[in-house]
Every structure is written in C-alpha cells, then in structure tokens.
Length: 250
Image: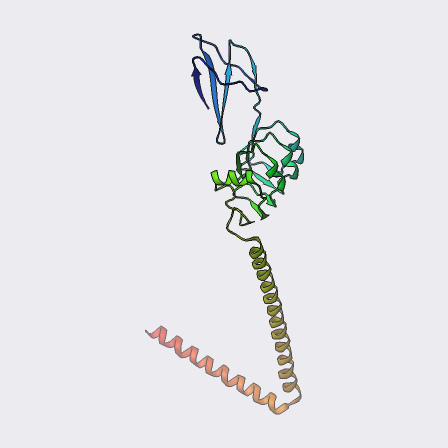
C-alpha cells in the first residue's frame, strides 16, 4: 500500500466504504492500494469522510480448516476475497457465481476438491483468479472471462492434476479413458494376485497332507524318511563342527 498526492484533479470517487485522510498544503491527499494485481485509488477532500465501494476479506495464511461456507456467496458487494494458504477442504461453493461484484478471488494452496463451479464464468468483473495447488478435478468451465484471466495468469490452475479441458492441453476424454484403463488394469492385477495366493496356499496344504498320510500309512517310507533326516542332520552337524574348529585354530 502506498500513498500518492494529486495537485489539481483527483480521480473520480467510488461510491461506498469509508476512508479518511488528512488535507494539507491546499492539496488533495490520496491513497493507492494494490490488491491481487488491482490498483485502487481513494481520496479525501477537506477532511471529509468519503464513501467508497471497496470491500475485501483477506484470511490468507491462517491454517483455517473445514469447508468454505455456502453463505459466503451472500456477500454480494465483496470485491476481493483471499482464502489462500489455509487448509480448507470440500468443494468450492456452487453459489460463488452470485458474487457479481467480485474482482479478485484467491483460493490457492488449500485442499479443495471437486469441480470448479461453472458459475465462475458469470463473474464479469473478475480479473484475478487463482485456484492453484488444490485437489480440483473435472473440466474447467468455459467462458471468455476465464480465458482472459488465464492469458494474464497462466499459473492459476497449476497443481491440480485432475483438471482438464481448455485452456489446458490435457484432454478430458483421454484423461477419463486413461483413468478408466488404469482402474481396469489395477482391478485385473488385483484379482490375478488373489488367485495366485489362493492357489499357492491350497497347493501347500494339499502337499503337506499327502506327505503326512504317506508317512503315516507306509512304514517303509517312514523309516526311509527318518534315516534320510538323520543323515542330513549328521552331515550338517559335522560341517558345523569342522568349520568352527577351523575358525578357532586360525
């Protein structure tokens, strides 16, 4: 925010809101406020309180949580709304398009999801929009107003991998097809893995029972099995003792 002085012809006065400044040295004092790329000029004449039409809400960087209330759309005279760098979740209110006086809207760096409301294209005064780095999905609303804003601020949709359609280069139909294909392949792979584990488990159980039954009912097989087991045990024991003796003697 910066102050500047007009000597003769101050700019035309807006209509609502109040701003007070000092009159000095027979000059009209003024204030220039820059809000999200918008430069707004305000003046006061002869220490008179002047009504202007500038209303803004800036709640950025406050770690706010929850959903953006639908009732915020009832603030019809709001010009600037900044809710960036918080932790808002849920969808962007569908009635946000009813805020016809809105000129600047910043919802960036939250955790918003769902589609961008088509009603945003109805905001004819909107000149600055930023919904980057959320979890938004779906087709971007069409409209010359949004296209004009995108030309001036091409970063406004960044960080939302689920968005598609103009002005982005991602095609919605191909994006949907790829997601469907990925889901199908993932589902098929999951079923194949389940069948593999099921078959391996059943085979293991059947094999154990076959060996157990053979040893139980065949005396010759049982004797041969235990003899083989004893031989393997003796070999392992001798190998371990010899190895240990070599290590200790060295």
